[in-house]
Length: 107
Image 1 (cartoon, rainbow, N blue to C red):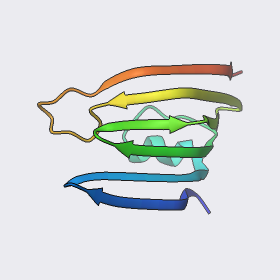
Image 2: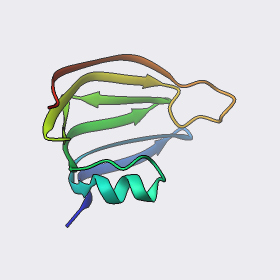
Image 3: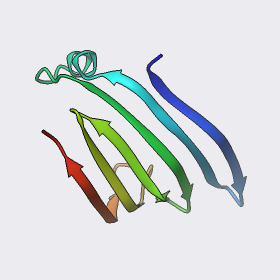
Image 4: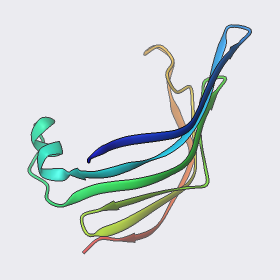
């Protein structure tokens, strides 16, 4: 079955500020169906991934550990991602403060 799975989800609101954390995975998704649904050029293969831990607090979205994506018969590993201002009103910018992609091997 394709789709996003979530484990260990927690959420709380302290002093009017939301914070949450989860881990999970992305079961294989058909890139043909995905690209068709978004009216993008046709892509082949599948997309799947492992999400070790994602947290949100004080307007910052942080990935702990490494995101592992398998796509187009290759592997992409993303480490150390932090986005400041995530999920804020459109007038407030969201900045990607850091990210590192390694092990990119797409043939």
